[in-house]
Length: 397
Image (cartoon, rainbow, N blue to C red):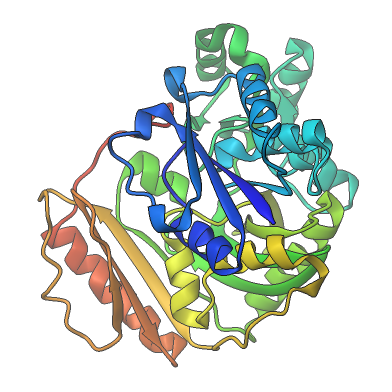
């Protein structure tokens, strides 16, 4: 099998390695801007190609033509998007080349925040109230009927990039005017106070093979915009929250049409009434080192399992997974190379190596032990490392 991997940002090394271990011919199409900085696992890549990336974006028509040219002499069997920003491009290539996998209509439900909300609501899932920033009369009716604050969200960005909290109409209209012709690429959503959770899962031929529920310490948007240490931990597997979240995730995967691969889905449990609302999903692994968190608790690397799913299809067999618990914390750091050697508990199983960042993962058979350590470490991270940087409106390499 020949698999074409798209990566406009550097990630997915373990996916590439596993494809090669599975006997695939691996082609990687990445950004020209990464040519001198990315450290790809070249031993696992048969051919490496670069696309110009003006303003960190690929020209769709140029990519289709370039890949079609490659296909003259290479039989491409699968196309995989390693970053959220490549998901729609991969779908377009699948449709153009007529190779298996999710096409553009289905992929929209895993990329476009407006499309996924509409599809989820049609399927009976609870979602916060929202409106497309398109027709001004519809937007005014929304603001009159749904109390502020609201959240102005780009439909196709990743994470908390470009998201703004809006406290009233007088704040909304200038923010929208500043968007100019890009207004229709946004939605306005009810802000629901509550706790944010995520479910990370592996899907093979529409069947969920593995899923694990986790809870953020503070909402990622709050950390991104207001500062603080980012934390998340695996929930106790038989807890009410975990059971409810896994059930909601099954409904999301079925309703939105996930065919195969991995997914990272976020939910909010409303503080007011305990209702679980669907926030967003994706056809990719979670960012912020959540892959390492899941691997610490289960022994499963989501990148590697995704590669196996792509290669094996209906023949995919899930390896036996551990049922331990893990917690992750990451902070921007004042120091260029923060020293975390003072965190010596035997539960520490992973340390982040990245300039101006400090990060750890702890693992234990006890969910309570993980919770205790995260609480202690978060306080120490704040004192020893923490720094703040305003959120970005656009992604960068």
